Image (cartoon, rainbow, N blue to C red; front, top):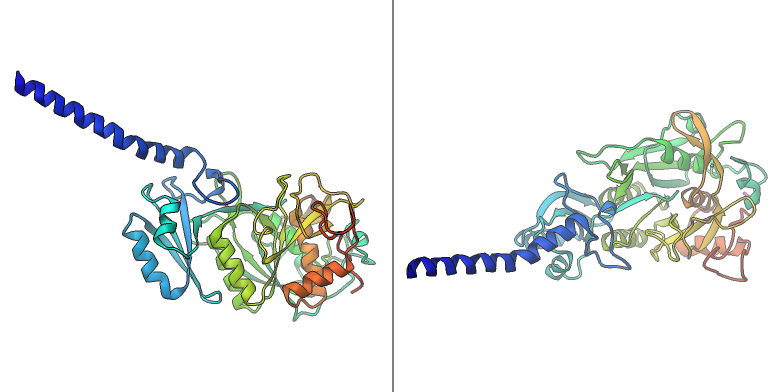
Length: 395
């Protein structure tokens, strides 16, 4: 009887301790599977905005100088992380490591293991984005497509796939690159084709002509199908940036938006250090602050206005410049066209103007845009229009 009672007590205590110690683990796993992540920054990021493994766990990404790869891998992998892929970014002098933390590591713990090395959730970035042909007149161009740019001027584009056979792009100089990895499912070509057309489109009627025809476009496909809609992730954005820098492209359009991310920030800094000027869409979430990458100090941010110079109601606040981006007539799909609204479509107009002026450093491009901008809203810089509506100032 005594033996039975003692055995029962042992089993009870064992079960009790199992509950006590397993509860935090279960709660942690439930939070990672259902709730918001522990990602640091201005706010937590929902699961829908983070790349997931095939098993439904969250991915994490690290930006590492090549000399530190071995040490970083050892620190993370001996503490429960599994490497998913490794992408060398030779032009940026970085290596991207994508990990599954297996519900063992948490982000703060990982950061503690590799201090001073950027590590973050593998964030997703959505398109930052119905016609009247008003955009050219609004910024002071005599006609759409009237200002040609020399072919030696390179423009980079990180977006979805571009249909180079679209009639408006048939005569454009376009070099294509894919940042996809095994298992990625490319998106359709509508958004990428629209943005490419606004940059370098050539259309005899003028309706679908871009603002920097003649320039050579380097277009990287970085958007793939994901839960919650088409998205680019940090790995594909990084691969795209690395390719563009390696191709000598120093002016890049980024018509996408998403959460703050340490690794993306590091990649933007690395590109900026190599003289890359990056122009980014403010984002379309009606927030009082910019989404990333527009919020980075290494990008020039752009918001959208309509034909009357009114702010687009869905645009985030805080951009440096405004450009037409409401009800623009754009190229779509295989040979189609239609109206589109969003800061996605305002950004390429600013990128095209920068190309027409020969590019230069980020500070030079910013100063040039500011000198010609038409003040909107209250005098000087304001969070709705920034320094104002960009103006062409001639060809």
